[in-house]
Length: 311
Image 1 (tube, rainbow, N blue to C red):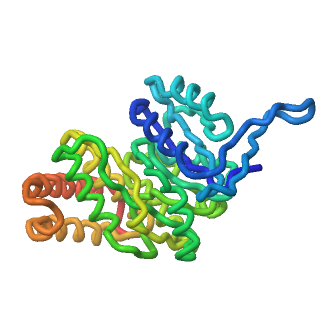
Image 2 (image 1 turned 45 degrees about the vertical axis):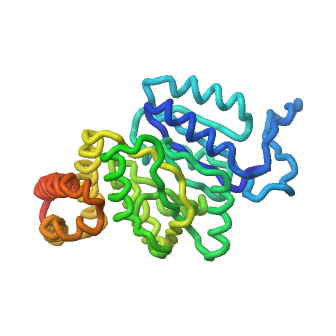
Image 3 (image 1 turned 45 degrees about the horizontal axis):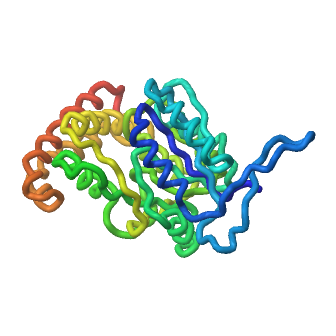
Protein backbone atom coordinates (compact mmCIF):
# COMPACT_ATOMS: atom_id res chain seq x y z
CA UNK A 1 0.00 0.00 0.00
CA UNK A 2 1.38 3.41 -0.94
CA UNK A 3 1.55 6.18 1.66
CA UNK A 4 -0.87 9.09 1.50
CA UNK A 5 1.77 11.76 2.12
CA UNK A 6 5.41 12.00 1.06
CA UNK A 7 7.52 14.45 3.05
CA UNK A 8 10.26 15.81 0.77
CA UNK A 9 13.55 16.94 2.30
CA UNK A 10 16.31 18.40 0.12
CA UNK A 11 19.67 18.55 1.88
CA UNK A 12 23.17 19.80 1.24
CA UNK A 13 26.19 19.47 3.50
CA UNK A 14 24.31 19.60 6.81
CA UNK A 15 24.54 16.06 8.15
CA UNK A 16 24.46 17.19 11.79
CA UNK A 17 21.16 19.05 11.35
CA UNK A 18 19.75 16.44 8.98
CA UNK A 19 19.80 13.65 11.55
CA UNK A 20 17.64 15.62 13.97
CA UNK A 21 15.31 16.70 11.18
CA UNK A 22 14.73 13.16 9.93
CA UNK A 23 14.33 11.74 13.43
CA UNK A 24 11.60 14.30 14.15
CA UNK A 25 9.81 13.51 10.88
CA UNK A 26 10.04 9.75 11.26
CA UNK A 27 8.55 10.05 14.76
CA UNK A 28 5.32 11.61 13.46
CA UNK A 29 1.96 9.93 14.03
CA UNK A 30 1.16 7.45 11.29
CA UNK A 31 1.01 3.73 10.64
CA UNK A 32 4.38 2.00 10.76
CA UNK A 33 5.76 0.55 7.55
CA UNK A 34 7.13 -2.94 7.45
CA UNK A 35 8.94 -4.55 4.54
CA UNK A 36 7.33 -7.73 3.30
CA UNK A 37 9.72 -10.48 2.21
CA UNK A 38 10.08 -10.75 -1.57
CA UNK A 39 8.39 -13.48 -3.56
CA UNK A 40 9.76 -14.92 -6.81
CA UNK A 41 7.55 -12.54 -8.81
CA UNK A 42 7.42 -9.54 -6.48
CA UNK A 43 10.33 -7.47 -5.13
CA UNK A 44 10.50 -6.41 -1.51
CA UNK A 45 7.72 -3.85 -0.97
CA UNK A 46 6.48 -1.74 1.93
CA UNK A 47 3.22 -2.59 3.61
CA UNK A 48 1.52 -0.93 6.57
CA UNK A 49 0.45 -2.16 9.93
CA UNK A 50 -2.98 -1.31 11.23
CA UNK A 51 -3.53 2.44 11.49
CA UNK A 52 -6.66 2.37 13.64
CA UNK A 53 -4.80 3.80 16.63
CA UNK A 54 -2.99 6.48 14.65
CA UNK A 55 -4.05 10.09 14.16
CA UNK A 56 -1.95 11.05 11.16
CA UNK A 57 -1.93 10.00 7.52
CA UNK A 58 0.17 7.17 6.17
CA UNK A 59 3.45 8.80 5.20
CA UNK A 60 6.98 8.34 3.99
CA UNK A 61 10.03 10.60 4.06
CA UNK A 62 11.95 11.12 0.81
CA UNK A 63 15.36 12.77 1.19
CA UNK A 64 17.45 14.05 -1.72
CA UNK A 65 21.15 14.62 -1.08
CA UNK A 66 22.14 17.45 -3.42
CA UNK A 67 25.74 16.28 -3.84
CA UNK A 68 26.90 16.86 -0.25
CA UNK A 69 30.67 16.54 0.34
CA UNK A 70 30.17 15.64 4.03
CA UNK A 71 28.97 12.33 5.48
CA UNK A 72 25.33 12.85 4.46
CA UNK A 73 25.25 9.70 2.23
CA UNK A 74 26.52 7.52 5.08
CA UNK A 75 23.96 9.01 7.46
CA UNK A 76 21.10 8.44 5.02
CA UNK A 77 22.14 4.85 4.34
CA UNK A 78 22.25 4.21 8.09
CA UNK A 79 18.85 5.77 8.73
CA UNK A 80 17.23 4.06 5.74
CA UNK A 81 18.36 0.70 7.11
CA UNK A 82 16.80 1.59 10.47
CA UNK A 83 13.51 2.71 8.85
CA UNK A 84 12.93 0.44 5.83
CA UNK A 85 10.00 1.53 3.71
CA UNK A 86 9.47 4.69 5.74
CA UNK A 87 12.61 6.55 4.61
CA UNK A 88 13.93 6.53 1.05
CA UNK A 89 16.70 8.66 -0.40
CA UNK A 90 18.79 9.37 -3.45
CA UNK A 91 21.87 11.40 -4.33
CA UNK A 92 22.18 13.86 -7.22
CA UNK A 93 24.79 16.25 -8.51
CA UNK A 94 24.68 19.66 -6.84
CA UNK A 95 21.97 21.72 -8.59
CA UNK A 96 20.36 23.68 -5.76
CA UNK A 97 17.33 23.10 -3.51
CA UNK A 98 14.64 23.59 -6.16
CA UNK A 99 15.78 20.84 -8.55
CA UNK A 100 16.52 18.58 -5.56
CA UNK A 101 12.91 18.96 -4.37
CA UNK A 102 11.70 18.16 -7.88
CA UNK A 103 13.70 14.93 -7.78
CA UNK A 104 12.11 14.07 -4.44
CA UNK A 105 8.60 14.65 -5.77
CA UNK A 106 9.39 12.47 -8.79
CA UNK A 107 10.30 9.69 -6.33
CA UNK A 108 7.26 10.26 -4.10
CA UNK A 109 4.64 7.53 -3.80
CA UNK A 110 2.11 9.68 -1.95
CA UNK A 111 -0.75 11.56 -3.61
CA UNK A 112 0.16 14.49 -1.36
CA UNK A 113 3.59 16.00 -0.74
CA UNK A 114 5.00 18.15 2.04
CA UNK A 115 7.94 20.41 1.21
CA UNK A 116 10.31 20.67 4.16
CA UNK A 117 13.97 21.58 4.72
CA UNK A 118 16.85 19.82 6.42
CA UNK A 119 17.09 22.41 9.21
CA UNK A 120 13.63 21.91 10.73
CA UNK A 121 12.56 19.93 13.79
CA UNK A 122 8.93 18.79 13.64
CA UNK A 123 7.15 18.54 17.00
CA UNK A 124 5.01 15.49 17.84
CA UNK A 125 1.65 15.63 16.08
CA UNK A 126 2.78 18.18 13.49
CA UNK A 127 1.93 16.11 10.41
CA UNK A 128 -1.45 15.09 11.85
CA UNK A 129 -2.25 18.77 12.58
CA UNK A 130 -1.21 19.80 9.07
CA UNK A 131 -3.36 17.06 7.55
CA UNK A 132 -6.33 18.05 9.71
CA UNK A 133 -5.95 21.74 8.76
CA UNK A 134 -6.26 20.84 5.09
CA UNK A 135 -9.64 19.22 5.73
CA UNK A 136 -10.81 21.80 8.27
CA UNK A 137 -10.20 24.77 5.98
CA UNK A 138 -11.07 23.00 2.74
CA UNK A 139 -7.70 24.10 1.40
CA UNK A 140 -5.89 22.64 -1.58
CA UNK A 141 -2.50 23.70 -0.19
CA UNK A 142 -1.51 24.60 3.38
CA UNK A 143 1.65 26.44 4.45
CA UNK A 144 2.97 26.19 8.00
CA UNK A 145 5.04 28.50 10.19
CA UNK A 146 8.58 28.42 11.59
CA UNK A 147 9.57 28.85 15.22
CA UNK A 148 13.23 29.30 16.19
CA UNK A 149 15.11 26.44 17.79
CA UNK A 150 18.79 25.96 18.47
CA UNK A 151 21.17 28.74 19.50
CA UNK A 152 19.50 32.01 20.56
CA UNK A 153 21.84 34.58 19.01
CA UNK A 154 21.04 38.11 17.79
CA UNK A 155 21.51 36.96 14.19
CA UNK A 156 19.08 34.04 14.62
CA UNK A 157 16.51 36.27 16.33
CA UNK A 158 16.82 38.81 13.52
CA UNK A 159 16.10 36.15 10.88
CA UNK A 160 13.11 34.91 12.88
CA UNK A 161 11.58 38.40 12.96
CA UNK A 162 12.41 38.92 9.29
CA UNK A 163 10.62 35.66 8.50
CA UNK A 164 7.56 36.86 10.43
CA UNK A 165 7.48 39.94 8.19
CA UNK A 166 7.34 37.62 5.16
CA UNK A 167 4.68 35.23 6.45
CA UNK A 168 2.59 37.37 8.76
CA UNK A 169 1.03 36.12 11.97
CA UNK A 170 -2.56 35.51 10.88
CA UNK A 171 -4.49 32.85 9.00
CA UNK A 172 -4.66 33.97 5.38
CA UNK A 173 -5.31 32.67 1.90
CA UNK A 174 -3.55 33.36 -1.39
CA UNK A 175 -0.24 33.16 0.47
CA UNK A 176 3.07 33.81 -1.30
CA UNK A 177 6.10 33.27 0.90
CA UNK A 178 8.48 30.65 2.27
CA UNK A 179 7.25 27.42 0.71
CA UNK A 180 6.96 25.06 3.66
CA UNK A 181 3.68 23.49 2.63
CA UNK A 182 1.40 20.52 1.96
CA UNK A 183 -0.22 20.16 -1.46
CA UNK A 184 -1.39 17.51 -3.96
CA UNK A 185 1.47 15.97 -5.90
CA UNK A 186 -0.44 16.41 -9.15
CA UNK A 187 -0.71 20.17 -8.54
CA UNK A 188 3.01 20.35 -7.80
CA UNK A 189 3.69 18.71 -11.16
CA UNK A 190 1.07 20.79 -12.99
CA UNK A 191 2.76 23.97 -11.72
CA UNK A 192 6.05 22.71 -13.13
CA UNK A 193 7.67 22.19 -9.74
CA UNK A 194 10.42 24.48 -8.54
CA UNK A 195 12.42 26.41 -11.10
CA UNK A 196 15.24 24.51 -12.79
CA UNK A 197 17.24 27.75 -12.68
CA UNK A 198 19.71 27.70 -9.81
CA UNK A 199 18.52 30.17 -7.17
CA UNK A 200 20.15 30.77 -3.79
CA UNK A 201 16.93 32.37 -2.50
CA UNK A 202 13.36 33.24 -3.55
CA UNK A 203 12.80 29.87 -5.25
CA UNK A 204 9.91 29.33 -2.83
CA UNK A 205 8.28 32.63 -3.79
CA UNK A 206 8.62 31.62 -7.42
CA UNK A 207 6.93 28.29 -6.67
CA UNK A 208 4.01 29.97 -4.88
CA UNK A 209 3.55 32.26 -7.90
CA UNK A 210 3.54 29.18 -10.14
CA UNK A 211 0.78 27.66 -8.00
CA UNK A 212 -1.21 30.88 -8.21
CA UNK A 213 -0.99 30.82 -12.01
CA UNK A 214 -2.69 27.40 -12.15
CA UNK A 215 -5.41 28.50 -9.73
CA UNK A 216 -4.09 26.97 -6.50
CA UNK A 217 -4.56 29.26 -3.50
CA UNK A 218 -2.20 28.53 -0.60
CA UNK A 219 -3.60 28.85 2.92
CA UNK A 220 -1.12 29.93 5.60
CA UNK A 221 -1.97 28.58 9.07
CA UNK A 222 0.37 30.07 11.72
CA UNK A 223 -0.96 27.70 14.38
CA UNK A 224 0.92 24.82 12.71
CA UNK A 225 4.63 25.21 13.40
CA UNK A 226 7.95 23.43 13.15
CA UNK A 227 11.21 24.35 14.83
CA UNK A 228 13.75 25.95 12.51
CA UNK A 229 17.49 26.40 12.93
CA UNK A 230 18.10 29.95 11.75
CA UNK A 231 21.64 31.08 10.93
CA UNK A 232 23.40 32.11 14.12
CA UNK A 233 26.11 34.37 12.63
CA UNK A 234 25.74 37.75 10.96
CA UNK A 235 27.87 36.63 8.02
CA UNK A 236 25.24 34.00 7.21
CA UNK A 237 22.47 36.58 7.58
CA UNK A 238 24.22 38.92 5.14
CA UNK A 239 24.52 36.12 2.57
CA UNK A 240 20.80 35.41 2.86
CA UNK A 241 19.87 39.09 2.52
CA UNK A 242 22.04 39.50 -0.58
CA UNK A 243 20.61 36.35 -2.15
CA UNK A 244 17.03 37.40 -1.38
CA UNK A 245 17.58 40.81 -2.99
CA UNK A 246 19.30 39.41 -6.06
CA UNK A 247 17.23 36.32 -6.76
CA UNK A 248 13.98 37.96 -5.68
CA UNK A 249 14.49 40.52 -8.45
CA UNK A 250 15.01 37.71 -10.96
CA UNK A 251 11.86 35.90 -9.83
CA UNK A 252 9.59 38.94 -9.89
CA UNK A 253 10.89 40.18 -13.24
CA UNK A 254 10.33 36.73 -14.72
CA UNK A 255 6.76 36.92 -13.38
CA UNK A 256 6.19 40.12 -15.36
CA UNK A 257 6.75 42.75 -12.67
CA UNK A 258 8.00 46.18 -13.71
CA UNK A 259 11.67 46.86 -13.06
CA UNK A 260 10.86 50.50 -12.32
CA UNK A 261 8.15 49.62 -9.81
CA UNK A 262 10.40 47.08 -8.11
CA UNK A 263 13.10 49.74 -7.76
CA UNK A 264 10.64 52.30 -6.39
CA UNK A 265 9.29 49.78 -3.92
CA UNK A 266 12.80 48.93 -2.69
CA UNK A 267 13.62 52.64 -2.28
CA UNK A 268 10.38 53.31 -0.40
CA UNK A 269 10.92 50.32 1.88
CA UNK A 270 14.46 51.43 2.75
CA UNK A 271 13.41 55.06 3.27
CA UNK A 272 10.65 54.07 5.69
CA UNK A 273 12.71 51.40 7.48
CA UNK A 274 13.58 53.67 10.46
CA UNK A 275 9.85 53.77 11.25
CA UNK A 276 8.55 50.28 10.50
CA UNK A 277 11.62 48.60 12.00
CA UNK A 278 10.60 50.04 15.37
CA UNK A 279 7.50 47.83 15.17
CA UNK A 280 9.04 44.82 13.44
CA UNK A 281 12.16 44.23 15.55
CA UNK A 282 13.08 44.29 19.25
CA UNK A 283 15.10 47.35 20.36
CA UNK A 284 18.39 45.44 20.52
CA UNK A 285 18.02 44.44 16.84
CA UNK A 286 16.93 47.85 15.54
CA UNK A 287 20.35 49.08 14.36
CA UNK A 288 21.22 45.74 12.79
CA UNK A 289 17.89 45.66 10.95
CA UNK A 290 18.63 49.05 9.37
CA UNK A 291 22.05 47.82 8.22
CA UNK A 292 20.41 44.81 6.60
CA UNK A 293 17.85 47.02 4.84
CA UNK A 294 20.66 49.13 3.37
CA UNK A 295 22.39 45.94 2.22
CA UNK A 296 19.15 44.65 0.69
CA UNK A 297 18.56 47.94 -1.16
CA UNK A 298 22.09 48.01 -2.56
CA UNK A 299 21.87 44.42 -3.81
CA UNK A 300 18.34 44.82 -5.20
CA UNK A 301 19.27 47.95 -7.18
CA UNK A 302 22.41 46.25 -8.49
CA UNK A 303 20.33 43.27 -9.61
CA UNK A 304 17.75 45.48 -11.32
CA UNK A 305 20.44 47.46 -13.14
CA UNK A 306 21.72 44.21 -14.56
CA UNK A 307 18.36 43.43 -16.17
CA UNK A 308 17.16 44.40 -19.62
CA UNK A 309 14.59 46.95 -20.68
CA UNK A 310 11.63 47.69 -18.44
CA UNK A 311 8.46 45.66 -18.91
